[in-house]
Amino acid sequence: MEHKNLIGHDGAVHEGLLNGHTGFLIDVACDAGRYSVVHPYEKLDPARVTDTPLSCPSCVAANSPAAAQPHRGRLAHGYAEDVLAKADSRGYVPAKDDEGLRLAFESLAVENPPHRCLYTLIREHLTDMLTDRALAAPEGVPQVLVPYKRYTGGEVQAPVGPGDRLMYYSAAGGYFQYVRVEALEESPAGVVVTVREKEWPPFTWSAHELGRRFSKLDRAPMPSGAAER
Image 1 (cartoon, rainbow, N blue to C red):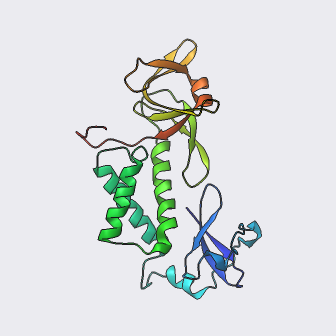
Image 2 (cartoon, rainbow, N blue to C red):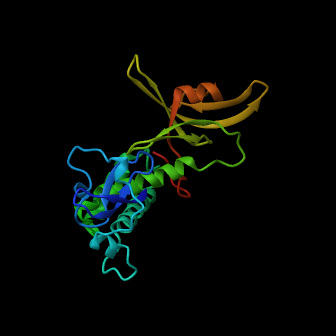
Image 3 (cartoon, one colour):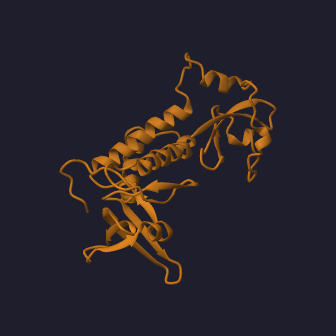
């Protein structure tokens, strides 16, 4: 997530909280809300980004070490960490087990409910954390890159390693094929990637074809001793 000073329609300079991959404005640091900077259905005009110091008193206060309440960006980050930790404790890969994330968020909402204004920020921080996991380069294997599409927007090239799940989409048949990477090996013709779908026999792809046909779903370490669904 990016923090940038923005000139609002109200004439004040606010701290904006933006998607670091798309530049989309998510919220501002004060309680005025994002519509103090952009009107409903309006995109953020790059001309509103400024180096001018904050002039919104509430945004200034939110960034003060003596602030009465945590900055909403940091507060949302803490909630996102809790959601991911709860999902991880279930023993399933979070991005694979969407139900795990939903249950974790519902559990958190009962135990320590966040204000509804924080939901989009929590989702953005959660997406950032899952993106960081997807971009973690595996050790000891040849580098093979495939697209990784972030939930809240933006696409990056992510390295592939054993245990990763990839998705192949056939637009003609509307068929979503999920495979798990078993091995990456050097060959005279280049890197060969072995994948397996369900319990079927494994098959191989060249690194080039893998990058053209598959996108990455997740990489998350399984807790020790946890059995996968």
